[in-house]
Image (cartoon, rainbow, N blue to C red; front, side, top):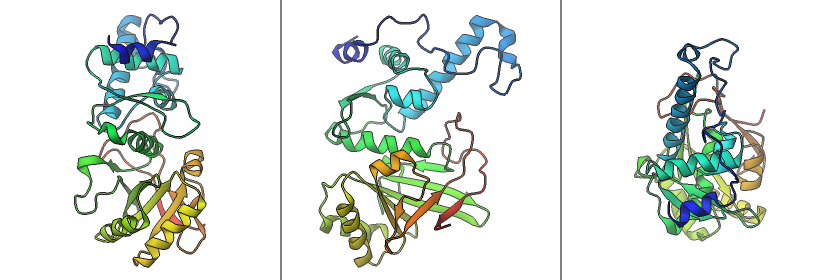
Amino acid sequence: MDARSNAETADLGSASANPFEAALPPAGHDGAGSTSSVGAAGPAEAEAARSDEITERVLELADEHIVWAQSLVDHGLARSRSGASRILTKLFDRKQLKFFARCRPLKGTKPHYGYSNAGFKIDNKEHEFLLSAIAFKFLGRVKAMRRGARVNPLTLPDLELDTETPDGEFGYDLEMDTGSMSLTKMAARFRKLKLTDRTVLIVTTRRKTRLENLLETARKEGREDVYATTITRFMADPFARIWTGLDGMNYQVNFPETNPATIPVENGGPLEEALPLETA
Protein backbone atom coordinates (compact mmCIF):
# COMPACT_ATOMS: atom_id res chain seq x y z
CA MET A 1 0.00 0.00 0.00
CA ASP A 2 1.53 3.35 -0.99
CA ALA A 3 1.23 6.80 0.59
CA ARG A 4 -2.03 7.52 -1.20
CA SER A 5 -3.63 4.40 0.25
CA ASN A 6 -2.27 5.25 3.70
CA ALA A 7 -3.78 8.72 3.45
CA GLU A 8 -7.13 7.21 2.64
CA THR A 9 -7.05 4.93 5.70
CA ALA A 10 -5.44 7.30 8.19
CA ASP A 11 -8.67 8.20 10.01
CA LEU A 12 -10.63 5.02 9.49
CA GLY A 13 -10.18 3.48 12.94
CA SER A 14 -10.35 -0.27 13.31
CA ALA A 15 -11.45 -2.15 10.23
CA SER A 16 -14.41 -4.48 10.29
CA ALA A 17 -14.05 -8.13 9.37
CA ASN A 18 -15.63 -7.39 6.02
CA PRO A 19 -15.22 -3.94 4.43
CA PHE A 20 -18.28 -4.56 2.30
CA GLU A 21 -20.40 -4.19 5.40
CA ALA A 22 -24.17 -4.54 5.24
CA ALA A 23 -24.55 -2.24 2.27
CA LEU A 24 -27.15 -4.52 0.71
CA PRO A 25 -30.24 -6.14 2.29
CA PRO A 26 -29.50 -8.82 4.93
CA ALA A 27 -28.69 -12.30 3.75
CA GLY A 28 -31.69 -14.18 2.50
CA HIS A 29 -33.79 -11.10 1.72
CA ASP A 30 -34.22 -9.18 -1.52
CA GLY A 31 -35.21 -5.89 0.14
CA ALA A 32 -38.92 -6.38 -0.49
CA GLY A 33 -39.63 -8.68 2.43
CA SER A 34 -39.26 -11.91 0.51
CA THR A 35 -36.56 -14.53 0.95
CA SER A 36 -34.11 -14.75 -1.92
CA SER A 37 -32.39 -17.83 -3.27
CA VAL A 38 -29.05 -16.43 -2.06
CA GLY A 39 -29.98 -17.14 1.55
CA ALA A 40 -30.28 -20.83 0.83
CA ALA A 41 -26.55 -20.97 0.11
CA GLY A 42 -25.65 -20.11 3.71
CA PRO A 43 -24.44 -16.95 5.48
CA ALA A 44 -20.86 -17.12 4.16
CA GLU A 45 -21.94 -17.59 0.56
CA ALA A 46 -24.58 -14.86 0.89
CA GLU A 47 -22.03 -12.44 2.34
CA ALA A 48 -19.62 -13.19 -0.50
CA ALA A 49 -22.39 -12.63 -3.04
CA ARG A 50 -23.24 -9.26 -1.49
CA SER A 51 -19.57 -8.27 -1.52
CA ASP A 52 -19.29 -9.22 -5.18
CA GLU A 53 -22.37 -7.18 -6.04
CA ILE A 54 -21.03 -4.10 -4.27
CA THR A 55 -17.67 -4.51 -5.99
CA GLU A 56 -19.39 -4.72 -9.36
CA ARG A 57 -21.42 -1.57 -8.70
CA VAL A 58 -18.43 0.43 -7.46
CA LEU A 59 -16.29 -0.55 -10.45
CA GLU A 60 -19.19 0.18 -12.78
CA LEU A 61 -19.33 3.73 -11.45
CA ALA A 62 -15.54 4.11 -11.50
CA ASP A 63 -15.38 3.14 -15.17
CA GLU A 64 -17.27 6.34 -16.05
CA HIS A 65 -16.82 8.69 -13.10
CA ILE A 66 -14.80 9.47 -9.98
CA VAL A 67 -15.92 7.72 -6.80
CA TRP A 68 -15.15 8.73 -3.21
CA ALA A 69 -16.31 7.61 0.21
CA GLN A 70 -19.38 9.83 0.54
CA SER A 71 -20.55 8.94 -2.96
CA LEU A 72 -20.72 5.25 -1.97
CA VAL A 73 -22.72 6.13 1.13
CA ASP A 74 -25.12 8.23 -0.95
CA HIS A 75 -25.70 5.26 -3.26
CA GLY A 76 -26.34 2.83 -0.40
CA LEU A 77 -23.15 0.90 -1.11
CA ALA A 78 -21.81 1.46 2.42
CA ARG A 79 -23.28 2.46 5.78
CA SER A 80 -20.62 5.02 6.66
CA ARG A 81 -17.78 6.98 5.14
CA SER A 82 -15.24 4.88 7.04
CA GLY A 83 -16.80 1.69 5.67
CA ALA A 84 -16.85 3.18 2.17
CA SER A 85 -13.19 4.19 2.51
CA ARG A 86 -12.28 0.62 3.40
CA ILE A 87 -14.10 -0.63 0.30
CA LEU A 88 -12.21 1.80 -1.92
CA THR A 89 -8.87 1.03 -0.29
CA LYS A 90 -9.43 -2.70 -0.63
CA LEU A 91 -10.21 -2.38 -4.35
CA PHE A 92 -7.17 -0.13 -4.74
CA ASP A 93 -4.94 -2.69 -3.02
CA ARG A 94 -6.33 -5.37 -5.32
CA LYS A 95 -5.37 -3.14 -8.28
CA GLN A 96 -8.98 -3.13 -9.44
CA LEU A 97 -9.29 0.60 -8.82
CA LYS A 98 -6.90 3.46 -9.55
CA PHE A 99 -6.30 6.40 -7.22
CA PHE A 100 -7.17 9.67 -8.99
CA ALA A 101 -6.53 12.59 -6.66
CA ARG A 102 -7.11 14.23 -3.31
CA CYS A 103 -9.36 17.15 -4.09
CA ARG A 104 -11.41 19.89 -2.47
CA PRO A 105 -13.95 20.49 -5.29
CA LEU A 106 -15.47 23.63 -3.74
CA LYS A 107 -14.10 26.17 -1.29
CA GLY A 108 -15.09 25.44 2.27
CA THR A 109 -15.70 21.72 1.65
CA LYS A 110 -13.72 18.79 3.01
CA PRO A 111 -11.17 17.15 0.72
CA HIS A 112 -12.13 13.87 -0.94
CA TYR A 113 -9.91 10.98 -1.97
CA GLY A 114 -11.13 10.09 -5.43
CA TYR A 115 -10.69 6.86 -7.37
CA SER A 116 -11.46 6.23 -11.02
CA ASN A 117 -10.62 3.94 -13.91
CA ALA A 118 -11.85 6.45 -16.51
CA GLY A 119 -8.48 8.06 -17.24
CA PHE A 120 -9.34 11.67 -16.35
CA LYS A 121 -6.60 14.32 -16.52
CA ILE A 122 -5.29 15.38 -13.14
CA ASP A 123 -4.95 19.05 -14.17
CA ASN A 124 -8.74 19.30 -14.35
CA LYS A 125 -9.51 17.42 -11.15
CA GLU A 126 -11.93 19.92 -9.56
CA HIS A 127 -14.04 20.00 -12.71
CA GLU A 128 -14.10 16.20 -12.99
CA PHE A 129 -15.02 15.77 -9.32
CA LEU A 130 -17.93 18.20 -9.62
CA LEU A 131 -19.11 16.65 -12.87
CA SER A 132 -19.13 13.23 -11.21
CA ALA A 133 -21.20 14.62 -8.32
CA ILE A 134 -23.64 16.08 -10.85
CA ALA A 135 -23.81 12.85 -12.84
CA PHE A 136 -24.59 10.81 -9.71
CA LYS A 137 -27.72 12.91 -9.14
CA PHE A 138 -29.13 11.58 -12.41
CA LEU A 139 -28.41 7.89 -11.81
CA GLY A 140 -31.68 5.99 -11.92
CA ARG A 141 -33.34 8.91 -13.71
CA VAL A 142 -32.09 8.66 -17.28
CA LYS A 143 -32.13 6.17 -20.10
CA ALA A 144 -28.51 6.88 -21.01
CA MET A 145 -25.66 9.02 -19.71
CA ARG A 146 -22.41 9.75 -21.52
CA ARG A 147 -19.28 11.76 -20.76
CA GLY A 148 -15.71 11.96 -21.98
CA ALA A 149 -14.92 10.13 -25.20
CA ARG A 150 -18.49 8.82 -25.55
CA VAL A 151 -20.19 12.20 -26.12
CA ASN A 152 -21.00 13.64 -29.54
CA PRO A 153 -17.62 14.67 -31.05
CA LEU A 154 -19.26 17.58 -32.88
CA THR A 155 -20.63 19.28 -29.77
CA LEU A 156 -18.49 17.85 -26.93
CA PRO A 157 -20.74 18.66 -23.95
CA ASP A 158 -19.50 17.80 -20.47
CA LEU A 159 -22.36 15.36 -20.00
CA GLU A 160 -25.10 13.95 -22.24
CA LEU A 161 -28.38 12.82 -20.71
CA ASP A 162 -31.11 10.94 -22.60
CA THR A 163 -34.61 10.31 -21.34
CA GLU A 164 -37.81 9.01 -22.88
CA THR A 165 -41.46 10.02 -22.65
CA PRO A 166 -44.67 8.69 -24.22
CA ASP A 167 -44.24 11.51 -26.75
CA GLY A 168 -40.70 10.53 -27.69
CA GLU A 169 -37.12 10.85 -26.54
CA PHE A 170 -35.54 13.99 -25.08
CA GLY A 171 -31.85 14.82 -24.96
CA TYR A 172 -29.94 17.20 -22.69
CA ASP A 173 -26.39 18.51 -23.03
CA LEU A 174 -25.07 19.58 -19.63
CA GLU A 175 -22.24 22.06 -19.18
CA MET A 176 -20.31 22.42 -15.92
CA ASP A 177 -19.21 26.06 -15.50
CA THR A 178 -16.57 27.07 -12.97
CA GLY A 179 -16.16 30.60 -14.30
CA SER A 180 -12.73 29.89 -15.78
CA MET A 181 -13.94 30.26 -19.38
CA SER A 182 -14.58 33.77 -20.72
CA LEU A 183 -18.00 34.71 -22.08
CA THR A 184 -16.44 34.95 -25.54
CA LYS A 185 -15.35 31.33 -25.31
CA MET A 186 -18.73 30.37 -23.88
CA ALA A 187 -20.35 31.99 -26.91
CA ALA A 188 -18.30 29.66 -29.09
CA ARG A 189 -19.47 26.73 -26.95
CA PHE A 190 -23.10 27.73 -27.48
CA ARG A 191 -22.57 27.97 -31.24
CA LYS A 192 -21.15 24.46 -31.25
CA LEU A 193 -24.04 23.14 -29.15
CA LYS A 194 -26.47 24.55 -31.74
CA LEU A 195 -25.40 21.73 -34.07
CA THR A 196 -28.02 19.54 -32.37
CA ASP A 197 -31.55 20.15 -31.12
CA ARG A 198 -30.77 19.01 -27.58
CA THR A 199 -31.70 21.16 -24.58
CA VAL A 200 -28.71 22.76 -22.84
CA LEU A 201 -28.41 22.67 -19.05
CA ILE A 202 -25.74 24.73 -17.29
CA VAL A 203 -24.58 24.27 -13.70
CA THR A 204 -22.30 27.05 -12.48
CA THR A 205 -20.23 27.28 -9.32
CA ARG A 206 -20.36 31.07 -9.52
CA ARG A 207 -22.93 33.58 -8.33
CA LYS A 208 -26.17 34.74 -9.92
CA THR A 209 -24.40 37.41 -11.99
CA ARG A 210 -22.40 34.73 -13.81
CA LEU A 211 -25.58 32.73 -14.39
CA GLU A 212 -27.32 35.75 -15.90
CA ASN A 213 -24.32 36.53 -18.11
CA LEU A 214 -24.27 32.96 -19.40
CA LEU A 215 -27.95 33.08 -20.29
CA GLU A 216 -27.54 36.44 -22.02
CA THR A 217 -24.61 35.07 -24.01
CA ALA A 218 -26.71 32.07 -25.07
CA ARG A 219 -29.57 34.38 -26.11
CA LYS A 220 -27.24 36.45 -28.29
CA GLU A 221 -26.13 33.25 -30.01
CA GLY A 222 -29.72 32.45 -30.91
CA ARG A 223 -30.25 29.68 -28.39
CA GLU A 224 -33.73 29.30 -26.90
CA ASP A 225 -33.59 26.04 -25.01
CA VAL A 226 -30.91 26.91 -22.43
CA TYR A 227 -31.49 26.66 -18.68
CA ALA A 228 -29.00 27.41 -15.92
CA THR A 229 -28.70 26.94 -12.17
CA THR A 230 -26.08 27.19 -9.44
CA ILE A 231 -24.26 24.21 -7.97
CA THR A 232 -25.77 24.93 -4.54
CA ARG A 233 -29.34 24.78 -5.85
CA PHE A 234 -28.56 21.76 -8.00
CA MET A 235 -27.09 19.67 -5.20
CA ALA A 236 -30.06 20.50 -2.96
CA ASP A 237 -32.58 19.16 -5.51
CA PRO A 238 -31.84 19.04 -9.26
CA PHE A 239 -35.47 18.11 -9.99
CA ALA A 240 -37.02 21.12 -8.28
CA ARG A 241 -37.92 24.35 -10.10
CA ILE A 242 -34.33 25.64 -10.03
CA TRP A 243 -33.50 26.02 -13.73
CA THR A 244 -33.61 29.63 -14.93
CA GLY A 245 -34.54 30.14 -18.57
CA LEU A 246 -33.81 32.97 -20.99
CA ASP A 247 -37.06 34.62 -19.91
CA GLY A 248 -35.86 34.82 -16.29
CA MET A 249 -38.46 32.29 -15.13
CA ASN A 250 -37.57 29.16 -13.17
CA TYR A 251 -38.33 25.78 -14.67
CA GLN A 252 -38.30 22.16 -13.56
CA VAL A 253 -36.56 19.21 -15.19
CA ASN A 254 -38.56 16.04 -14.72
CA PHE A 255 -36.78 12.77 -15.22
CA PRO A 256 -38.37 9.40 -14.44
CA GLU A 257 -37.46 7.77 -11.17
CA THR A 258 -36.51 4.13 -11.50
CA ASN A 259 -35.12 1.84 -8.81
CA PRO A 260 -32.57 3.98 -6.87
CA ALA A 261 -30.66 0.85 -5.90
CA THR A 262 -29.95 0.08 -9.55
CA ILE A 263 -26.92 1.56 -11.24
CA PRO A 264 -28.21 2.13 -14.79
CA VAL A 265 -26.06 1.60 -17.84
CA GLU A 266 -26.45 3.05 -21.30
CA ASN A 267 -29.68 1.89 -22.91
CA GLY A 268 -30.71 0.51 -19.54
CA GLY A 269 -33.96 -0.69 -18.05
CA PRO A 270 -37.57 0.39 -18.55
CA LEU A 271 -38.53 3.96 -17.72
CA GLU A 272 -41.59 5.53 -16.21
CA GLU A 273 -43.24 8.59 -17.69
CA ALA A 274 -40.96 11.63 -17.97
CA LEU A 275 -41.68 15.18 -19.01
CA PRO A 276 -39.50 17.77 -20.75
CA LEU A 277 -38.75 21.12 -19.17
CA GLU A 278 -41.96 22.77 -18.06
CA THR A 279 -43.28 25.47 -15.76
CA ALA A 280 -46.06 23.43 -14.16
